[in-house]
Image (cartoon, rainbow, N blue to C red):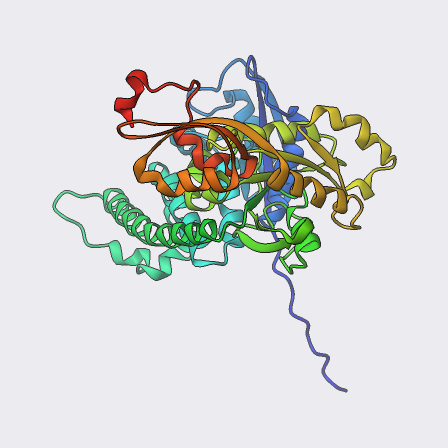
Length: 450
């Protein structure tokens, strides 16, 4: 009798229990139930199996354990009952919260928050050197004040960093009076310094690449939006690209740029960027500075919104807030209401368009409305002009020439240190002049500032 070949088995997923709190006087963009549903999707993306959830209404976070003492005991009982191996809080925990919770729940249960979960997902999805370095930096800076048994987890997970700089086992030598925790902290600080130096090199390369693109005079467009809104699908549709697409949160992490042909022989360079999410950790915004510059340096933003999602307007507001945080709120923006094909009544999208800035409804999956989007992009990049008054130092000769060449100059006045210009510029060029923009056509005392 022939032996049957045994098929490899998939290892069981870690069991996760979710905790959400509704803080009095601090309403989020989403209802607590919706926020926990999103947290469940994040957990699934990270490879975890959600086995239950617990909620509490609070006037303010508890000083020791974030949730109240009674809820902590209830959580401990539920974690034991469901055999949960990790509990995940929907809000960011302080290092003290995390330590106290781990004491109560015991060594068999890991405690993490939304930020730590997102960092784990990013570590799984980063494939380029830049992406891995950015995730590694964010993880180190997040875990530094939380050093307990989390350090061994970080050494395995942090963007592959543990392997590149020597394993954590290499930090065993201690100076007089040093504890292992102090040694570990010193090691992480050294790794943070190393990663920052490597990122500076990557950022310098990206800056040179952006400068080269600007010299080509081809306008740049950045796709922004809530995670899983369909940015990569749209890029594939309009640029005939082959960017990875998956119905998961943060399926795309590393930016991808492609050329798109527009009307009249014109073109644009479109970059697909990392998706945003509510409660986006500030550590991630800082760590992804180089990547987010693809947004802040763009001539036009396409804000992709999943119009079929029940929280579409909340997602839109969350992304808009993040764009302001990274100082990209001034860039001309088109709202792209995506996934028309998923609506029972596609006409419903037309009724909701008034809630969104300069919008067009499409389906990136089927191509419906994409032609109208391309036409609107052409108008915004090549036909839409914005009034501008700018005081340009003589050292900014390239911008002075650009204003004359592509703008509609109405008035020019030369001063001792520069040129005062008034006119209209294509919207795609406004970002380059933002630093030099003034409100009135006068030199007066301001000339000394040129």
